[in-house]
Amino acid sequence: MYLTKKKAFGTIAAAFPLALACCMTALAAEEGVEYVPAVYSTFWALVPPIVAIGLALITKEVYSSLFVGILMGGLLYSGFNFEMTITHIFEDGIIGSLSDSYNVGILVFLVILGAMVCLMNKAGGSAAFGQFAASKIHNRVGAQLATILLGVLIFIDDYFNCLTVGSVMRPVTDKFKVSRAKLSYLIDATAAPVCIIAPISSWAAAVTGFVEGEDGFSIFMRAIPYNFYAILTIVMMVGMVLMKEEFGSMKVHETNALKGDLYTTPGRPYGLAKEEAVEAKGTVMDLLIPIISLIICCVIGMLYTGGFFSGTDFVTAFSESDASLGLTYGSFFGLLITIGLYQIRRVLKFSECMACIPEGFKAMVPAIMILTFAWSLKAMTDSLGADVYVAGVVEASAKGFLNFLPAIIFVVGCLLAFATGTSWGTFGILIPIVVAVFQNSNPQLMIISISACMAGAVCGDHCSPISDTTIMASAGAQCEHVNHVTTQLPYAVTAAAVSFVTYIVAGVVQSAWIALPTGILLMVGVLFAIKLRGNTVAEE
Image (cartoon, rainbow, N blue to C red; front, side, top):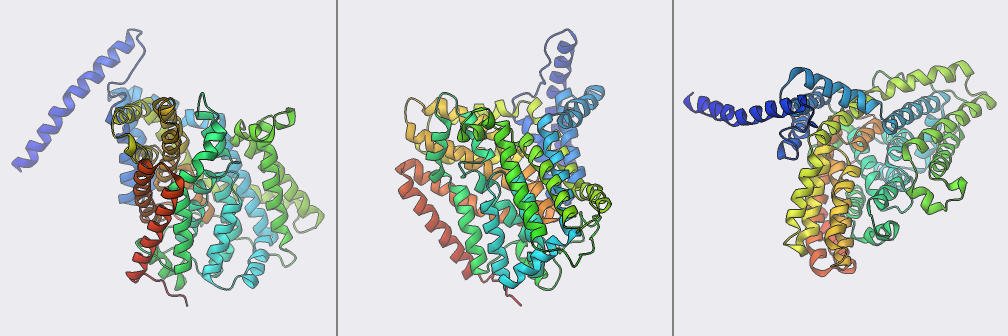
């Protein structure tokens, strides 16, 4: 009891100066000075997302965990002032996030895609494609490889990738008893990791925009062979499928799926969405034409927002595109084409098509709620100066250990993206620092370090339960979100560990011809080590 009280007293004593400083800052704000939280640009800025992520992993409940993180951010920002906490949470956080045009565009895209999935299900297109795929795919390995292939082919945007691959492949993987957790991992691992090594994608456009004073697209192309996490994740994913190996909690999910339970846990967040009766007249074309139309329309929409139809060249148009607005335009016209197709073919009545729109909205409610909370949590960390704090840490580490800097940057990128749930924000913080450090001293090490920024951001984004891509992968697979996070985490950490070692090698040899084969050999060795442990999931 004495020790407990002593610890409690120590905690109060440590918190007192912080509370006093917060009060002083609040008084300064009242006198007209620009308000800056007392904990601005300190480690405290990373506490809210750490708390939210920790609670989500412990309690398996994501909504309340995210809100507690948001509340923690509001309290730290306001210095525990009640009124300022509430106004900051709702005005700057939740309402501010939902009033951001980019975020609203993503939500509109989600709703429209949910409606299209509902339309394709009701028309019988999804069931027809499932029957067609079943005639061509004969086992679980084939179903998973087909999912990976489709994920690699849809490289334009990670949001679009997650939801499209999920809606198309879910009936196929269900038929061959692939767990929803494994499906969500396959979707997530072919979303951001593929987009970050695809020259024509919304991610490439984001990265090139952060490289000031340099040819951003050229640097992006030269950095692709050094993006070890993305490449090794794909190697690991394909290797695990071919070897029929699973480990960690994923093995439990896959074993239960073979027994008929695709979910393992009671959570069914998408169970409220109605399963529509399949019409006999639905064909494969009733799924393929809407999906192909959606892809074409989204590409055109992104090119339009980048000024392609005003004379801008193709590559520049993609690099300057607004992914949110482009996907909104594309999904809207894709929806119109789908409804028109079903009217012409007399597959669905117009009233039935209209009824699918609110049903699709309801199916996306879990993803929309988690995204809203995740964006609000990011607003809290931004207001606390998390980016400034991390930038200072990286600049301090750049003074020494130059050859080890790519590995250090990779770890920092992982931690920052994991804590904030944003890879693009991580790019924006780290890439300008790297360019400033190496621009005039070691251009080759600059390329490797920029790639380490991208790889670390994708890795942290891949692991984080508050990442929008991770959330959409759960939505695409219709998997309980915490299940997806906990089953995917051991796989992502394994790929990250091999990538870290590979970045050490790359920092020393500064050659992709040596570092990349070394990383691939290390990953293959790890996969064989896992196989020797006897984690094979036997097929029925």
